[in-house]
Image (cartoon, rainbow, N blue to C red):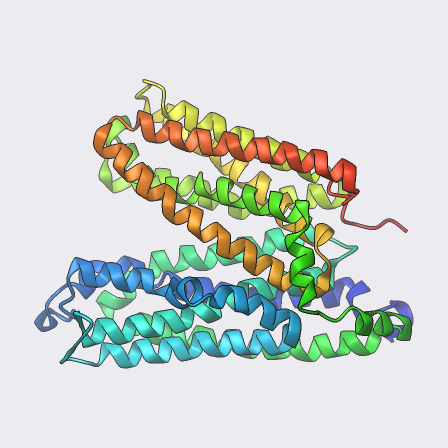
Length: 444
């Protein structure tokens, strides 16, 4: 009946929004597990006699960074994109969810180890770091797979809104992990948050299997002409070179490096900034910092919907980035009012929502679907370098200037550079005709 009404399954609002809920659920579970150990540092470092693992701060630091070891140093994040484009969304999604499950199983096993050292780490820390590294491969692979699934199902429809809602659900997963992990561990045991994580990831894997059934139905609902076109548009290795030669791809990649380097590292320093410069009590300083990420949960889908209906994607990106520049410049001023700090964090949440809401739906307008996975993976891979370098620079700046003026000016300069790149995107869009300023919803 549905095929008689709709040209293909993705034209059905019920079908495509069901797909969004399914795949975003799998991604949300991954985000929960990625941050589930973050609130447990003090418990992990407690002696075993007190229910901990007896780690040192260095052991915990190595474990926290292990999630990106295979992705960055063994280039797995780059290869994940190629796997996605060569093997398809269904295969890659099931593989990604399975890797996340396997990673948590290894972490649970590592928690039981009580003896031995590996590379200077306690056996438990080494094994749990291995598990986190395996999980990290699946986690990043899931992210690019879900993004490509959204493009496949929502192109011509509410793509930016779908991506915004997907991002909102992912951040809800992070917020839930940060909120419930420590209480669960204290009430039950240190391993209980990981057992909960394993259960949630299995739910995510089952959800993705349901998506696979619906995605096969989408294949069957497509017209023979569309199927022939898809066969001719299979990924080829030469497509990587085509992507790398695209000026639009490099502008978006450079923008991502600069924009996210001005946001994510800042949030890591923001809590201490609130305490030192604005006199906020340590018990509520974290709430001040959380204004930005929690604000994006509500605002990103809203701004995505505006882009879908009215277009002006690059305009939204430029506006959000200039707001971010003004926020960091404001934090550098010799004003010590906590009310002023709250106002700046509210503006930051708006800017932090505006730019990503329009940015990610712009990528499929520049890069063909057949090599979209590779493009996303290369963007994320290059972006990781910027997000690791900026905190090192800011940390040294805070040592030499504890007033945070220098570090805030560094963030402001980074955001301003991102705005300049965004203006370059607007110029290239006019020359190349990508359609970045056009609405995502096709009329008629």
